[in-house]
Length: 245
Image (cartoon, rainbow, N blue to C red; front, side, top):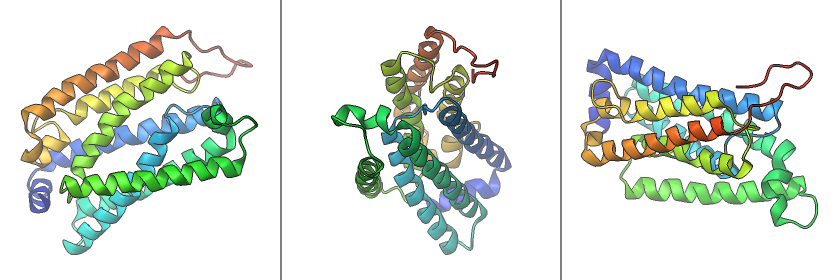
């Protein structure tokens, strides 16, 4: 698959634009996360997603760096490695905020007393260790030399995972309609057919019936989450400050 990816990004200029849009959607999702956890002291993604993405993105950064090194620093592998390093920093911030402002909401149900910083860090480290095992074990099982198979799964996780947390909260605090719509758009883009979708254009491996069937199901989950957030009462402005829609 490595040589196929190199050939696709060399001979198909439109794939560069498609990939840039795909990565941009991912960054926008995290901009929402930053804004929400800073302003509302509540993140839109559950802690296990942050620990998973940290393990996934650090692994991906190394894999793409090695691919770049072994393929004359091919630009896509190099840029992808740098992009994942930036995403890792995003996750470090999210994990920091989880400990600083969310630890009681996240882990309070597991302790009789107030959750300490040490307890929160201990739980995060344990989850990260587990997630590294999951990511790398399945990367080997899937023979995922370019991490694109895992990348598709991370978008499936983004489309479905947050909705369960939002359902538990039953409120718009810590999430937003705009974020839910952004996730829906990112999910649709993931499963578009060859010529307009990043995965199916980069490799024929993804141009299979089950990929599109999965896309339909996952898009429905993402759409459901949009309506879920819309069903909650609108946020009330505090001191005239603009809320995150």
